[in-house]
Length: 417
Image (cartoon, rainbow, N blue to C red; front, side, top):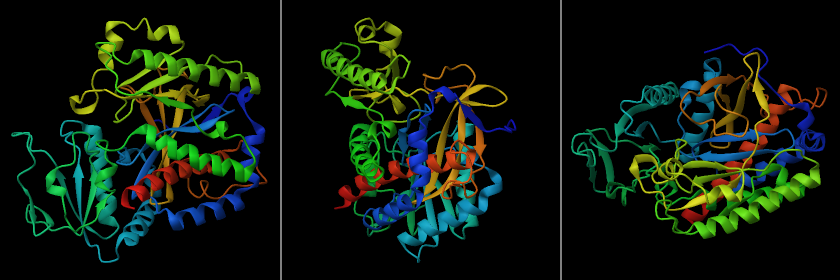
């Protein structure tokens, strides 16, 4: 992994000093606000948030409740991850001693295996007995026969866990084996992609950001991506594309209006994404409404299926956010990814790609990762430093990440209510 001395810089012509300064100067008010929010809306067990920084705008573009990539975190800060993990687990129950991790079925994906190994080792070092299980048996493609539900207690290969930690996003459905079990499932099984949607998440996020921006008297647009949603769509038969065009037209108009207001000399673009799912699949960038009527076969094929071969039939149209950060000295476009256990931020990394521009999806083959040395920067800004210093920039990322976590916490609250 390459040593990045100056972590990242972004084009100074695109900075919004008022936004950055407002967050840094009001950090005590912000921390008090978050503290009150967590009392009512406890955070999901763990989260990772993909953030884009244009300078004039900083916003999350994805909130992952079954995060991978633990192997890309800064190894020197392991003590911080262990402490936050212990705190998150103890909030569930102080009686937990055994944890079953249910992983994705990526037995040939060395990067995912490395992530699961890292996560498992962290939990072990936090003082818990850990076992990792595949949900699906690779030979039969059915539920792993080592699972059994005995008197509403989930058992795996004679291992009786006190808690089940999902690192499988349940894209293919919630298995019956999870029904009525008494052990806590982290996060809630109903937050899997079978039930959850990005549209619903960003509706919660928009509500959270509106409340937060009122607190600081700033424009909510500076912290959130605009979005629209259609009903069912089929890119093969073109069913639903008239709705797509209508919403794209409106979304481009709204973005252009904001760009004009703030004097931003950029071309608006939109990311069309699968409304459910991860792994950078089912994503398409458009720079104009006209592009939607001229989609070629390759573009349409890309938008037919998501992870696990599931049919893509719903999408979210999301405002494209330029990433005006570049890793130095290698000069690659980069975006921060921030991790948490509960509401405690533990750091993250920059995702970069030397073959992508600042308007493209970086979560694609060929991406590289560079740990962010958070230490206490994510919760402790320095008013005496430049508002663009790494310490203060990381604090701002921490604020954006926690706003996304809070939106997910509200999703969880309403599922459990």
